[in-house]
Amino acid sequence: MKKVEDYVRSIPDFPEPGIIFRDITTILQDPDGLKLAIDAIVDFLKDKDFDMVVGPESRGFIFGVPVAYALHKGFVPVRKKGKLPCETVSMEYDLEYGSAVIEMHKDSIKPGQKVVIIDDLIATGGTIEAITKLVEQLGGEVVKICFVMELAGLKGREKLAGYDVDSVIIYEGK
Image: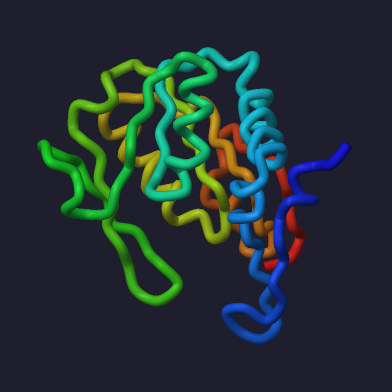
C-alpha cells in the first residue's frame, strides 16, 4: 500500500540550486493520495476534543475543510489582509524577505472554543505562529496543529513549542 509521501513530487533545484521543492499538487490530483492525506490528519484528531478547524489560505483550506467536514466541525478561514468582509483581527509576521499580515473575522472564534489548525506545510513556522496568537487573542485554545508536510531543517516547529504538533510527512532537510 502506498503512503502519502509516495504521492509527493520532488523537484530538485527549485526555486534555487540546492533546494528540493516538495509539490503537493500530485497528492491533490490523485484520489488515493488525497484520501490518504485527509485520513492521516483525521487520524491525528481521533481522540482530540475540539470545536473548530482553522486554516490559512489557500492550502490550509484545501486540507482543513474536508477534515472539518469529516469530523462535523466548523471551519474558520485565515486570509491575507483585506480579503475578509466583516470586522477582523490581524497579525503581522515575518517572511524570509519582509513581512505579511493575516486576518480572521473577529467573531469567528468564541472564548473557550478549542481549535485545531491545519495547513499543508510547516517551513519556518511564522504563519502558524501568527494564527495561534490570533486564536488566543479571540479567547480560543489551540489544542492541535496538523500539517501534511514538515521541512524539519527550517526549524518551524521551534516557533510552535508548547503546542501539540503532528505532520504526516517529515523531511529532514529544507
